[in-house]
Amino acid sequence: MILTGVLLAVIGLGFVGWFAARGRARLLYTGRGSMHSMPGYHGWHMALWILVPALLAWAAWSAIMPGLVDGAVLADPIAAQLPDGDMHRASILADARNMAANPDAVAFDPLAQELAVPMRAAQSRFGMIGGILVLIVALAGGGYGFTRVRAGFPARTHVERAVLALLLIASLMAILTTFGIVASLLFEAGLFFKDVSPIAFLTGTHWAPGNARGVDIDGNFGAVPLFWGTIYIGAIIAMLVAIPLGLMSAIYLTQYASSSIRKWVKPILEILAGIPTVVYGYFAALTVAPLIRDTAASLGVANPSTESALAAGLVMGVMIIPFVSSMADDALAAVPRAMSDGSLALGATRSETIKKVLLPAALPGIVAGVMLAISRAIGETMIVVMAAGAAARLSANPLASMTTVTYQIVQMLTGDQEFNSPKTLSAFALGLVLFVVTLILNIIALRVVKRFREAYE
Image 1 (cartoon, rainbow, N blue to C red):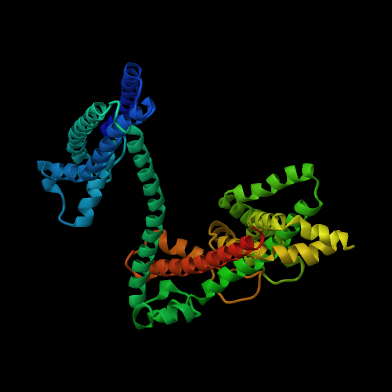
Image 2: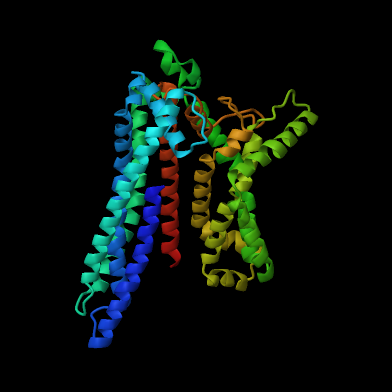
């Protein structure tokens, strides 16, 4: 809490420094008549000298403060009663830390309640020390920045360089995050493949990680049923819904609808993309799945299951209609009007023009939209968790319960699991496969879009 208050104080000090440096620069401008940079740049230069060093000091102290607090607590005589086991000791310290932050919290171990008092005192002491250090750094930076307010000082150049560095850091964060995700997947998947053969994992047809014991561990990690369920639900059933409806809606909106209808229908259609996937999951589990079960029972199907690939695939297809529709809409709109006008001038009807001119010309963009929609569908989790079931089976029956890669990842990484067991590590191997597949689909889609743009720009 102390460090948070100090951070707010530093931000306020930055505003004060901005006004002070700006006012000083205006006085110099009035007195001399010429300045290298406008007064606002001097204000931003001083604000940067206050905020950046102080934020760095605050981040550094926030990183080292927990270790200092734990060291001070362990040096307290009460800490001599802590058990020798590292896990039990860490659990008691975590409870004490929680009680220090929230006095109304309840600790399961009485020792944690006793340690909460020195924990709270150590946090206050080191928080005060860190706050003072951050304020000193902020004032020192502000003082240095104020001394740079001169007529010939290139404040604008320094501010623009700082903004450029900030933009570079922001772009690098996205790249480094991607590398971090890939590195973590590769590392954990490598630990999994030390115990399980990659060939058995990629070609096996029996998935029962809970039964994986001893020598026959490879035979229980066959992921083919998971891959089939993912493709069957996300790339077959969902696409049978999304492609016709999305493409037909795009054709109607671009070729037949009036401007007033398009103005209302297109935003309503795109609202589907903004609905949370958990809402789609509830809709699939509570409405679509029972409807499919009752319909199957009325048609004579014996013991139809409430959880089915068809229920999840239908709702998933509705969810990704906007992806197909928007890309097809853009692709059709990008076709030069001269092509459709020429076809109509030669006597072709509008439907013939659409079938023989517009759709072939816009096909690369439409294919790119479909590929992006497939990559979105195979990565969907909530709809599958709530409507498709958990049975790993190879079946072409859409009324059967199936599972997917994303469902198994959720199941492997939730609950009380041993993190270093092959069962848990299999989630990272599945995630790596899913990552590679979606990456390939996105690369194909981007290359198709690039070819399309080159053709008509």
